[in-house]
Image (cartoon, rainbow over all chains, first blue to last red; front, side, top):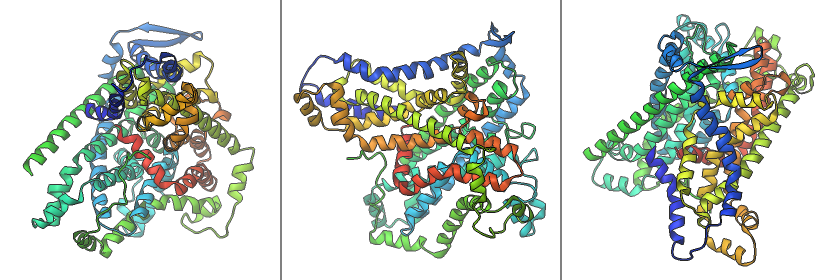
Length: 323
Length: 298
């Protein structure tokens, strides 16, 4: 994260540096206040305050007595309860499986296809536009359409499977306990892979042609060029895409909620859907416990992102050093 | 003019070596594979459109038939039937989206201007800006429960305003970032000239600098339009009264309640998707650039 933020701030720093020495004037506080107060209003009220309030709530139990909200301090009880909550464990395991499998298939597919499309001149814009389309469609629409596609009796998948004689594979995809999570993973992959593809394609097009030419002059084969030049140079992009894909899966809500609502029997429950259920769908009215889930899970994801960035960065340096 | 947040795709290699590589991968198998993938991605949409022109009876007897005639009955009923009141949800979505876009643009251009221009640098400006960027990392789950409590407390539940405020807040970090990086690259001369001509800070901003920032403005509009139009989590949390629902929330419930009326459901999905698809087909490159620029900041 730190490297990206540094690069994000750089243009501002550069702009300020160019002015130093040319003119030194008093800071126009009035104008700064005028420009920034609307932003700070939103930021403090709807971002900072809710963040603190979620942490605060996570140490409390909130209940209602005769329409009055009663908040009781319970210390770490909500967090302790996480350890015995089996549904939370299921949702956590499901989300972790998704967080591991999802980014891997997405990055592998997107990279291979980007390489194919990049080296292939015709229809290149067509593929880019077409594959990106699912990104634009609401998760609700995606979820509903795929509910039909995976319908047991007449869904597209089962009709196709029966059509080619694989009746045994035509299972009730969304009704069993072992398949719904994989359907969710697949559908989310379907919806977001175009995005990773476009990012990787952008990364590919920024690799200097001279390097590849030089390698070719030295007699490198296509495979060597890809593994020793293109992939190492592409690794910053691949790291970004992996992390974006990972965090996207960690907070995904729409597709799961519409496709399965976490069911059946929590078979495809994720942390995001479980927070929503504990907070609203189950009508427990206690926002304390779901807050504890959210805070705990945010910590886990943060650690995950930091570890992911650390190991991916290390891996990519080693590869460059070895090449 | 437009800062190159995404590399340009037109300078692709065409040397002899590349032509050879090209020939290598240009064979029919690869092309067929790519077309098959495209088909897999497009099929759900096509199927949806086909179903929307048929009747539920036809769909149940044969899910994969083609429409017998170009039948707009589903769309007519969907759009005008008071029982479904689709226009109501469409209207809600338009109000919320337009309201949020307007507010996001107003706040993020102002703030982006102050963060981007050297004239307004102050101590800790970079720190304030970085803390704003950090907010982009926060998942909605860590904020939306207190947001719900706030809206309850101020009597804003079930209002368009609650969604407009929250959508704006969620969009501001990325939008401000995009505006700030754009403003930072505009030359100083025009700004200085405006001051010499006697324009104040605000007048310089909206008369001179804002018109120059049109590309960034359109990026901010496109990216956020998509997010606002498709948002579900806050929409189902802050809105519980049926007539105030936005399209995604309404569709989810509509299809849930009429789960066997496939023809009508498909028509509703097509209509909900249409505004986004039309804009995408017209501005696909802008869309792709905008979304990737918004994401790559990390």
